[in-house]
Amino acid sequence: MSVFRKMSSAQIIILGFAAFILFGAILLMLPISTRGEGGASFADAVFTSTSAVCVTGLVVRDTATYWSGFGQAVILMLIQVGGMGVVTFAVALASFSGRKISLKQRSTMQEAISAHSIGGVVNLTGFIIKLTAVFELAGALIMAPSFCREFGVLKGIWYSLFHSVSAFCNAGFDLMGVKEQFSSLTYFSADPLINIAVIALITIGGIGFLTWDDIRKNKFRFRRYSMQSKVILTTSALLVLFPALYFFFGELSGLPLGERIAQSVFQSVTTRTAGFNTADLSAFSEVGVAVMIIPMLVGGSPGSTAGGMKTTTLAVLVSTAVSVFRRREHTRFFGRRTDENTVRSASTILTMYLALFIGGGLIISRVEQLPLLTCLFETASAVGTVGLTLGITPTLGHLSRAILILLMYLGRVGGLTLIFAALSGTTGNTARLPQEKLTIG
Image (cartoon, rainbow, N blue to C red; front, side, top):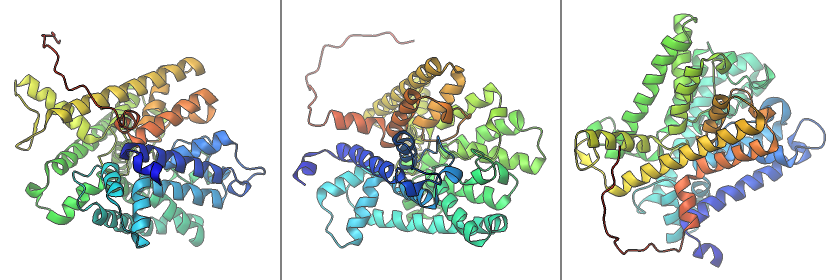
């Protein structure tokens, strides 16, 4: 315990995720976890466990046909804990058991859910648990008629629960391999209940628990929301609207109108780190693939079940550019300004994600001798914890899979969290150096 007291919050978060991934991999290696004999290899188990805990959805083995009922239950448990956050789950268990939550635990929880202050984080944890349970149960109830009609009552209920948790946690794992391996939800592309439930769950899980707490307190009085909630809701809406319009007019024009609208909206929503698809992505043009990569990298919002750079990062970068164009001194939103540290953090996160996304894509393309855009789509899916794929992940070699594992892990814990953990205990030099002009642009 003394070791944990000396660790920073960032170190606890990254080690917590790593430990849970290893725990999940061990469970998935048990013979009972697979349908065949002998159990999964360590490589397959650790990839699947990382993808589940980091709520990504990339798979090297079809979830429905390779993993047994026990293995699927393990994957669902990993998704649930990973979506809520390992630290959030641990604090919730401690709170429910009646243990007193220490200041260190509260501080770690604050950083894990991106809360602005340490006050009220324990109550917020209870709200997160209740919100998760309510929406996941509601999603399962909505999808149950469709799945029960297709697979029978017991299997239909299990499928409803599995896909509801997977959608709310923005994980993208599915059990549709019983229809066709790696087919995601394409079989239910015209089913309104499945489409509505999955779209709603992805959106609800992706906008963040802090935003929902703001909505709970202020209801629909938008003006009373915090600046962060306003930025998240506005940016999220725009990131769904514009790709959906492109998909509607540019990629899915051959479909009937109703199905065309449903698939356009679904594909736009799911690129925000969810990983399901109702359309055949391999049929998309190169422009369509590139359009999907952008929201995949952005991802969801701070304190949500989603990964990626986050909507607030994109909003800060765009607003900063607008401020420069208009020669304003500060980045501003809704009559409020942000500090320079926020702008620097957003620039750093963008640089890190671009380096990981492009660097990983280049290496995989070179090693596997595959088209660069296809590999970039896969690395964007990994670092954004999305889970969408153009079908190459199961065929990749060990080095390429290791790169995807690293990208999924960094995308979930956050690049800045990893840097803060590595540099914990170091103090920066406060001396101010001489200033000199540098021409930009």
